[in-house]
Image (cartoon, rainbow, N blue to C red; front, side, top):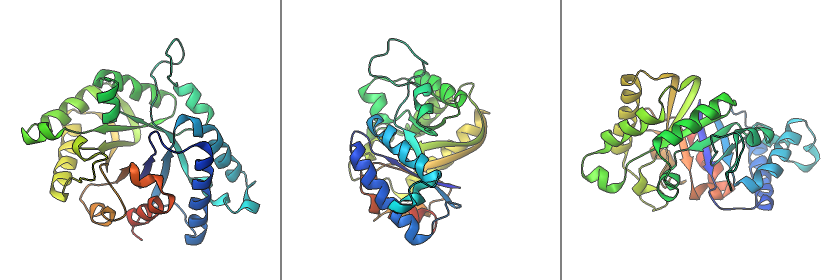
Length: 265
């Protein structure tokens, strides 16, 4: 199974989300999509989760056939962040229990923007992962090095530390998504070349094996200025199981185009 994940970050409103789902639904209908080869996951801002969740539930129940977007029923929802605590005085945060109410199946953890802007540590990210799994939410663990760290030849050391601490005592019997996102390629228009990405993928799989992590099936994604111009070449990289897409995912048609490339059409 491949994974095509949209990370809208702090973009698009609930109303925008409805328009987006309408466009995606029409594309799915046009291509008679089955989602057997690749999963489509959308991670909108918290404010759009309620309405988008309602639409997806109603589509699943067959209530939207007259509107022409009933085909979005197999699109999955993800969240961009989650606090490891179930409740309490954590201003501005959201818990796994709250996400469960909106049938959120995925959550992004460890994104470089959270690490750098909000000082999130690997230990804190580890707590998020374990909490998510205990509430039947699948984590998408983001890891990656800065340009300075790469130029110093420290990529493997950085990835090892992030994985060692982030996956400590984690048990997962299903697909576990690890998104390799070189920090210098996020939102910059720069993309790591094929050899860099393949090397990083192999490092990650080797490290997970070396750490003897209790993860049944690690899946490696790439994120870092993925768009419909480079997706085809990127999709051919060895041991690459999908994309975590930022800016390009804000356009429904471009996102669907990348999805089609990923599943081999």
